Each structure stands twice: as C-alpha cells, then as structure tokens.
Image (cartoon, rainbow, N blue to C red):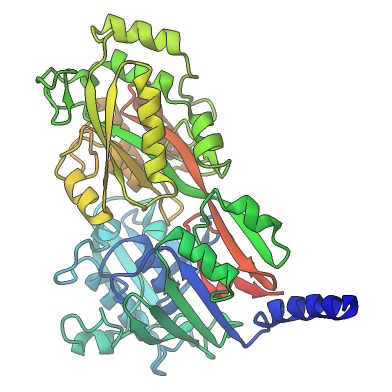
Length: 516
C-alpha cells in the first residue's frame, strides 16, 4: 500500500505539470471581463490585456514599463521639435495574411480617439498629435501640437488595426471580435461573454510563434472562486491572487506564486473645493462648513492613517507603503517626498485647533471588488478616523457607478486606485492634480503645480522634466491634495510547470507565461 501511495504521489506530480508542455493549451483565470474586443473602445485594464494578445502597438512597454520596439523598430525626434519620425517593422502580416504598412498605423492613430459610442476612448493619449502621415510604406511621420517628450510612451496603448478592414467594418463590428484581425501573437477565435475568450497562436508572429497553441482567458470575478478554480485544476494560471490567500498558495507543492510591484497607487481623494460637501455633517446630521478645506484637518487625517498597518493587516504584506503617487524607479519619484508618520496626539491637537475636537460625521466611498481588499481598506480607514471622533459610514459601489459619480464630483472622501501602462506618470499626475482635470475628484488647485505640469508636458530635457514632476508631487503632498496609502503588489499563482512574468501594468499575457 505504501508503494502504491508513493507511486500515486509521483503520478500526480507528473500530471500536475503535464499541461505546461510547449504547444499545449493555457487557461488563465482573470479577475475582470473585457467590455469589447475593439482595441480602441474603452481605456481600461481588462481591454488592454486582451489588446496585447491580438493587436500589436507601435511601441511596447516591457514588464517594468521600459519602452521596447513593437511594430516600430526605432523612433527619433527630427530637427523640428514638433515632428517625430518612426521606422516601421518590415515583413509583418496581419492574421488574414495582408501586409502591415504605414497606412494601417495612420488609420489606427486617427481612429483610436474617436470610436462611435465608446465610453472612454484612447483620446487622452493622442490629443497632442496634430497630424500623422505615411512617408512611405515603412516610415511614419507624426507632427505634434507642441514639443511632446512622451510621444513614444503615448503610443504604447494604441492597438494597430488593418485599414482595409477598418474602412469597411460596420459600426460595432470590432466590439464582438468579428474584425479582430491584428498582428499580435494570438488570433481571435471566439468570445462568449461571461465565460471565456478563446485565442489561437499566430504561427507567423514576428516575435516568434507563442509557446501555447490555444489560450483561454476566463473571467472569474470572485476572488475565492478564482483560487478554487486553480486548486481544482480548472485553470493553469490566475491573476489578482487575494493577499490573504498568497501565503497558503505559496506553500502548496503543486503551485507557484509570482509577485511584482505594480505601478498602481491606492490613495484617498478629498473634497477641498466646496464650502459645504455632500457627505459631511455635524454629529447630529445638520450641515456644517466643509472641514476638509482646512489643511489642519487634512494633516490630522494623514497623521492617523497608518499605511504600515494597512500593508501588514489589510494587504497581508502584499503592498508597499506609499508616500507619493509615482512608484519607485519611475520619473517623478523622490525618496525624500514623505508623508508624516502616525501621531495621534499631534492629530488631535490639529483637530482642536481647527475647531473639530469633537469630530463630525462623514460617508466615505469605495469601489466594490475593483482593487484587492478595497472594502476592507475603507473599513480600516473608518476605524482609524474614529480616533479623531470622526463618525464614518462606508459606502461601497459597483465600479461603473463609482466612477460615474466620482467624475460628477459627488463624493467628499473616496478611494482611488490608478496605475499606468506607458512607463511615464505625467498623465496620471495631470489627471489627479491639475486644476479642472476631469479626474481631479477633490478639485484641488495650485497655480505652481499647474505651471510645473505645463512645463513637464513639453520639456524635452529629461532631468528638467523629472524635476518638474517631482515638484508637482512635492506640492501635492505638502498640501495633502491626496493621501496615498500603498502601491499594490501584483500576485499571480500557477500550477507547477507554468512560469508567469510579473508586470507592473498588471496585465497577464499568455506569451509571457513560460513552460517549465
């Protein structure tokens, strides 16, 4: 019996890794479903992940967001600071066999900002482009409205589609996958909403045929169900492992866990604009002047938000405390930009000075299962604020409702989780902090920060541009325009024999999953 048991253990180990043989299928459980197969329809993470499988971009961002050649092999600024010249890769074919040329790039860059009925196109990445022209079949010239140091970064999210197909496609045809003809490492097979997206290897991919003949992307939005699917062998890889489950999965002999720092920062936005704010009242429910406009109150709040405790207790160590918006290693990050360490006595003194020793009542808003432990984070924040006699109610909203309301400035104090895919944080800083920006939910305004953002937008000298981005962050943190708590750590788990490449942009790419 002992011999039989030992043989069964060996057999299980062999079978556990059998699916990782090159040429086999790969099943990935992802945490959110795409809204469209159209690479230009909506600028959100799940769609971006699908885009990278099917549609190449001119410029790629590597796992750590360093720029890499894609359909463009080189890019350079000409003698005119408004004109970039881009050399395109030769010999590339779309999935239908037609050749890729500069005409397809021109068509895609013109289409991406203006897709009919799209909820959020890629316009913000391309709004500074004045004109795009094909010099010849393999040379692209892009004229910008102003000197634009981030043009190569801005091209990263833009999937290239076939002009011939795009010009004849009926409205909405790209959404379903009917016209999903790209140059990417995989071909589109089918999309069953709520169930899966099925892909097949592109044997003619310019980067080499992928290791997997067939890939299934399965949206499993419930974290527990995603872990259960992996343990049951229903999928080979899962993304967004819940922090609480990561240690247990790491101990499983048939599984492997991969971790990597994300570019996504979790921070809290506060209404610092209105004299009265909709979700703050006196303890008895009567209206009061907005206390969040007072820097002393914001400092007091910052002094009781224990980022270390959030990382340890709420994120189970799978995060890094954040004192700024930009993560380490990227332009604009400076180690000496710091948030104050927790100090309850100092916080209470500030509240008393501001006339709020007895606190007030406030509703804070958070997403429902968009970020790891988002509701638990809000509940922990509520407990910390109670030490300042702030009575907190937590409201958790579905993602679509949350951001619709946030962009209408309906909140007083709300969680935000922002990352970026291009390797440059300028857009995020602008959206979060520039006066009048649609995603500046607290409507913070600072003339010097606006000046520095305007300078960073056009500054071609890397050192001067980085200094401007650092200056913006320093001003924002000193004035507590937002309160960052942590940078996420992305976590994947896989069956033994499947090696996942961690990515800062949170994407799970089948062509970066290796067989071992």
